Image (cartoon, rainbow, N blue to C red; front, side, top):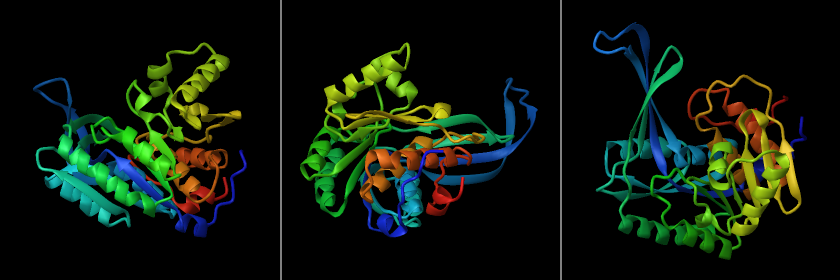
Length: 315
């Protein structure tokens, strides 16, 4: 197993991460599946329990505070029942909330129907925030920057990061590391960030397929140079993770454990990286910790987090 860097609770307690991006409410309906519907060839789920959790950028911030660091959450939501529920959940965690409300938008909600311990259906409720609300978030971002050590952008493609290029420039001008969980096929908007963390499918959409590891390294390093990034962290599911930087590449293997649910695993990985960097670790030193955190969280159901004790428990 890769050696884990020493990271004290005190270091983490002094680390402050500003999380910016698309927050959402994750709803789960759990039930029993005993029969097929007479109306259509689909299972009938008799709902017996409901649960609500923070999703996307809110889950990223929750992962930061669960590790023991401090997190602020800057996001745009609607002025609706889902946004107030999300804000109530955030308030219980110690995350410092900065919600921009857009009365004309819906707060993004992902509703998952679970039967027999597996996801049967997901329903998404969403739309794009208005330009004026996003502009006010940019002003709020500038005001929040001085109180933080690292900025983390959580892009879920819901429209909340329309001004991400300007915010990256502001953070870098302030001398801060910028970590980005990217979305879409155009990464030019992430130019000058410190590190982006695509998964295999996301990277494939940007650089195209690769024949072997040598071609992968060449294509990723070209992308890194074009975008003026310090590093690209490729998350590779059962193959672990690879960090590509100016020194070359550093690979860590995945933890050998049963995968129960990959929902939110990318949130945990980038949150751990951000917390570690804010606490003073280099990207290379933070990599094994982020890998371990990701391996732990896939053994849990739904959007979940990893604590300091779990992260540093004996393997």
